[in-house]
Image (cartoon, rainbow, N blue to C red; front, top):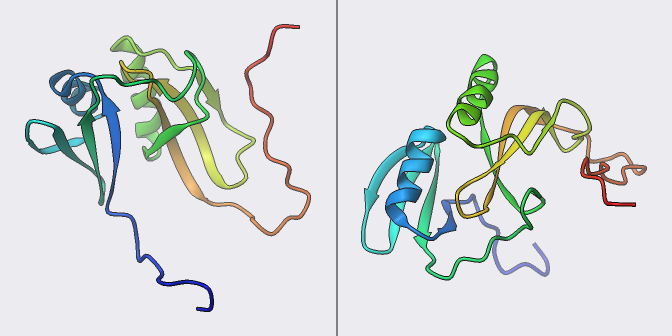
Length: 150
């Protein structure tokens, strides 16, 4: 392809910064249900479905969003009836749902809910129904559900 040096064939993993690897492992394994693979001094390796991610020990971690916001996030799919069970479970574990939406997502369709891990990383849980319509020229993005003080 002209102008491109290469074309990636996929994403192998992404990294999430946490302040404590053991606590991070507990959250992502016990609360989110991800599969623990292994751990070393600086990283915990996980699998979620057919994808992988790592927790990185970020001693000076700065949350990517202000408290309660979720624009910068990592999305994890949870299918069908498991989605409702997941929302109930994370709340029972002490992680409130920041935002729940059934409509308004035209790119990645399905129900969406956002929580934050203990370090303020926003996590999207999505009952993914498919890719939406990218071709509509009138798409301006959805309005965020947070309200600013007037």
